[in-house]
Image (tube, rainbow, N blue to C red; front, top):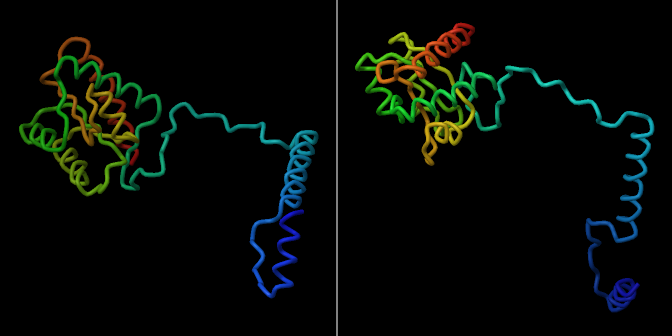
Length: 191
């Protein structure tokens, strides 16, 4: 009530103020109460947002910052397999990290799988790699985040591109690489 008295006194003195866009305290309480009642009615009628879309097993999870040219995008299962493979290969030092190393390895005709991040900005820095991989007949795919790609390669730095090399890998990593290479080539042929 104190603010009401101040407003009336200012009006009598000739000071005119514009009313604020924000509703007063009583109006805000009334709106909150109406919102609560509306949600109670929705729950009673069963129209609340209880139903959630069933998650597909291998649907790519695309954040807002992924470039539209980042195709083919690996799905959830394939992404997990790729990160696991990158981790094992990093321990055996069978990976190339970064654009320069990967391009050099491809030009030296090393075979393997190339994994690129879709949220690289500007995307033009890796836009030539899909063409280079296709010319060398190397399967490639995109994952959603460069931070996760760097973490999978056992480094703290975000990494834009990683190549798991067949030549340097051995044993279990080579078997794992051959399996995943077929899966990556399969999603690559869809596009």
